Image (cartoon, rainbow, N blue to C red):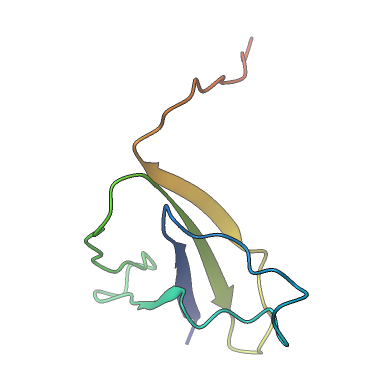
Length: 90
């Protein structure tokens, strides 16, 4: 069984000051376990944002042998700056 979870960084999240904390583990972050409800290898969870702004989500996965995959990050919400996409020429 694959273990998949997400960590949500809300729009007002700020990195803790390393000189003020003993550990960088932040209890205030929202965490979700993603589930594959129908066996199609698509993992999901329902989440309703409570604040306006840009959210950053990092998704993690661990396989049956305990190997951790490379985390994938994405953002969603209000974007207040221009986004430049790469040009792909065939």
